[in-house]
Image (cartoon, rainbow, N blue to C red; front, side, top):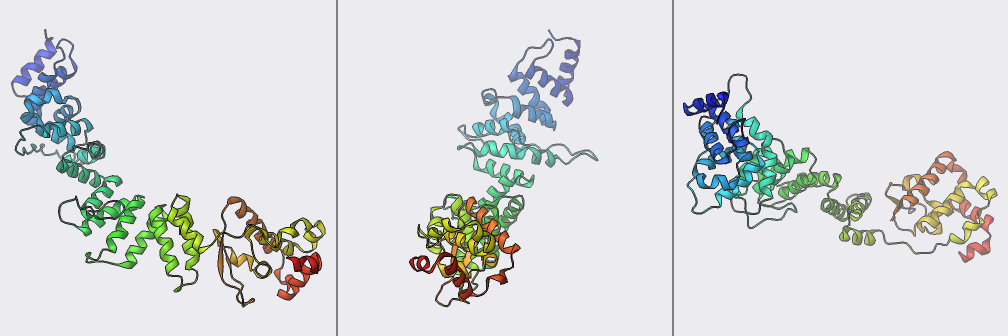
Length: 413
């Protein structure tokens, strides 16, 4: 038997008091001091309260009333699950999807509008926006989810600042997937401008996929604001944030444009190394064409055991050039003439001695490992500390090399 306090709540609920109906629904939902738990009865009173605009009533319905209890009163309960789903209640999303799949389908039932917010209170949409990301993710995982519900929740989540929802909404509006390919199964009209608005917001929150998708939109011939420069800018933003496909494309584009700017080959290698490090086989193949692996043996290797303490002390730069020749398989002319400081690009060496040695060609040598980078840094510090003018020209450097290691040894090399 209900106690005195519960009796007061029951009388108020029967008289139509919304607060009492909510309180009675809670008592039956969770069990009161004297009232037993009765979930179907709880649903009845919570629906009564929800009809009067009590938001907590439909939130409790969405969060705690299971599908089996809602099914017998589907038409009465459905609007409140829809309202709870809009506010981001994950359980409501699942039950709503189940109820909508029941045959025969019900006609569209508009969810009752909540009462106007009192002066100074937050707008009702704020609560919906706050919970929408969780609800959207829950429905996204449901393969049988109603697509209209999914789009509505995705939009709410995007408006609430969820970057994944913004990306998904942008891709939906562009009718493309994350690789930038058109998705034929997506019906509806493409809206690139709205797509760019959402993708930009997702990109500004750190999603590389969003910048990559924008690069695909800007090169679409059907896009009225098609722009190759904008596409490239977006592609480089994505690449800089670690997008492997964008890094590969940036590398290939830079390599093809090397005739317009000679240092584009350096940029190409930079991006291709990034993509290769993420497992791109195409990037590795491109690197092998641009900077082929060096021969396993170097002319300078027999000279390494002959680097005495006396030589290291009196000819430190000559010793360093021999070490460079072994490390990066440089020819003798390259080793003696290379401007080491200018050649270092961090991820590679630009070996270019054409100004002093006309028969040579410009080429790139990759810095492939941390150990190579460490040795190169040590050699660079040496060149910064010692006056390079003391080395003289190529003839003088070659003479010094032959003097220290012998003409016979150099002829064999």
